Image 1 (cartoon, one colour):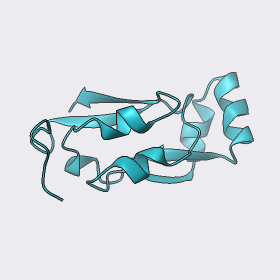
Image 2 (cartoon, rainbow, N blue to C red):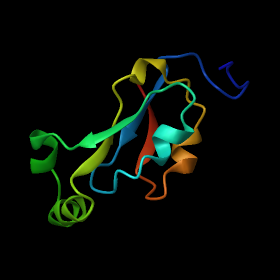
Image 3 (cartoon, rainbow, N blue to C red):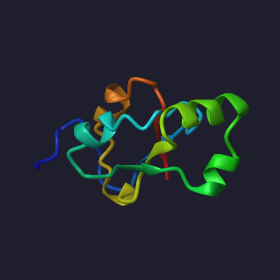
Length: 94
């Protein structure tokens, strides 16, 4: 897909996911034209770092959360931020 003029050069920004908020609904996966995201079971280390409310939320959503295995491809178009119903994604400098 060609880059939107609002996009940045790949690698300048990366998506950061608040796992206490993420419900693994995969809206970010569907919205991202650069295939940055995947939704899968939360890693044990990430689960241990959740707040009590985050752990309950994770349990309610079958332990799924978003990850960014292809974060280097992010062009900061912001579609993931807009698509996330939990407001669990923000773009941060590398």
